[in-house]
Image (cartoon, rainbow, N blue to C red):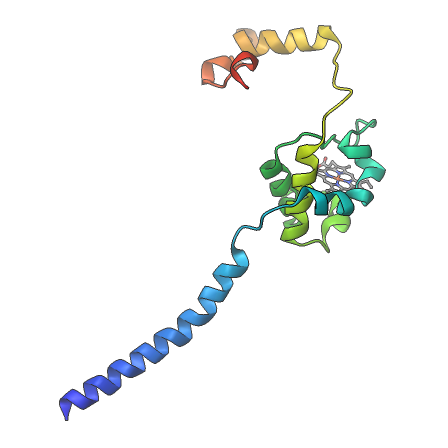
Length: 156
Ligand code: HEC
């Protein structure tokens, strides 16, 4: 008698477990990372070119260039615009209807594009190079190189 109650109880516990874990497993699948397709992203990026330029090379400093940007970074920015963690009234309505798959495809596409027009005036990048290598004690800015960040020669 005790034994059969136990086995009924156990069956009940197992039934409960499978009920409660069913939806959890489905949610995990939905949250699993999606893989981006640059081809699919190219078609979806037509609307972006109006501001970010052809292939993500922007001619207007108000609109950042996206060409050649790391895909993980781009995806994260798009997700943050949608959640308003990065609050921008221009970007929000554009990406609000888009999905995680759209973000992954767009990010994959822009990562494959070649950046252009980045040739800076040497007077600017020389100042940046000096800050990177030596920092500026007077302004309490530590050297980036001291933080162990790779300099351009060691980045392949
Ligand atoms: C109406 C103009 C406009 C359009 C169209 C537009 N964007 Fe933007 N986008 C902006 C502006 C302005 C910013 C800068 C926002 C800020 O300062 O935070 C921006 C920023 C971004 C950033 C962040 C870049 C960075 O370096 O952090 C990404 C990524 C981005 N847009 C992707 C897209 C994608 C993908 C599309 C097309 C689906 C798109 N944008 C369409 C205006 C636009």
